[in-house]
Length: 361
Image: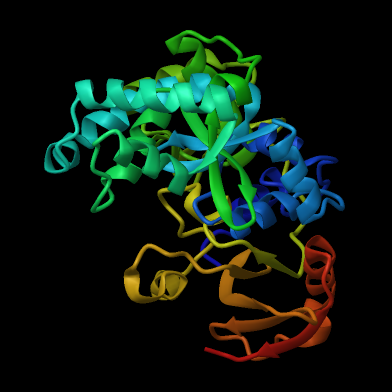
């Protein structure tokens, strides 16, 4: 591996190795935010970082308003602590919406339209508490507002960035939306500088060792803002030089023991997407295999000794779940080596693993 020591420490701080947390809410509070555009992958990303939480436990944390799903960073759906959702959205939204102006013009969305849609949706959700995307789309259409060609989804996305709504629990397989003020009724109120400092603490504590450029990628803060945020957290965060590069972390900076032999990580996991520079965990020649077809869909990842060394997928049926594991270049991976991780995944789903197929890429 290019830098196993960095990878091992990241795995520990990201709760992949070492002590786990007790609850799903503890996971998102520790890491600050986890990407959540794929619901099934996001729930596993949270579950694998706990001692024994199941899918039902993660979904209960969402339904009980301990975890909020919203577009908190980079215009991408994330799982965040309920009490932190508002200040994270408030910090991120101006940057995201400014970058999105061309798309808004293409869809003929302006401030007047967003205000009108906001009034309609707020009134409906105050009456009904939660509504599916299809129901909200129908509400807008009945008011004469076109939702074709992704316009309806973009309106909901913008209203989430305005701090009005956020995704709620699933109804069957349908995503619902709720009012953010109802779903996160006890928000922490942080100023801009306080919010940036808190974001730096969450990121470097949960992802370190990481560089300021990694933090800028994750948060979309400027380098100047990132430097100040890290400096403001002096005493909570520390900086060290590794291979001539400055890395920031929380805690005492002590090297951890080696990682578990193998790990089955979710797609979009923070172990990969939490960093701009991913070379400590992934060989460049394997990077395209994580995103087959280059379509932005990240496959679940097999980690061996800290290195992202393969992908895997699941197939859920009536009798249980089947797994296909594809190492990139290590044919020595056996069912026995994967047994513990496979068992944990089955326990998380509450389903037996009825079949596992290992195929070298």
